[in-house]
Image (cartoon, rainbow, N blue to C red; front, side, top):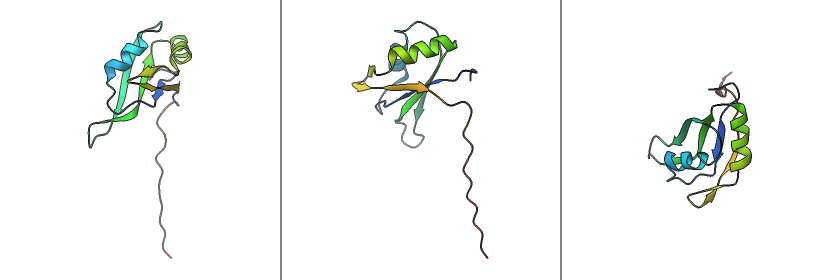
Length: 97
C-alpha cells in the first residue's frame, strides 16, 4: 500500500465487477495502480465496497473529489480515503473465578 492510502469506494451493488470500477476511475486524470473488490468467500458476491489505489497522492485526492457521488450500476457510490494499515484484532478474554 502506498504511504497516502487507498480510496474506499462504498455503496456498491453486490453484482458490481472490477471492470465497472476501473471504467469509472478512467474518467479522471491519473493511473490506477490496483482495484481490490471485496468479495464474500462463502457466496462469491460482492460485499459492497472496493479499495482503489492511484499512483500519486494528488491523483488520489482528485479522484475522490471528482468521482464521489458518481453512479455505478445505478447506485451512487461514496468515496473516502481509507485508513492506513490493518486494524488490530479484537480479543475477548474470559476469566472464571
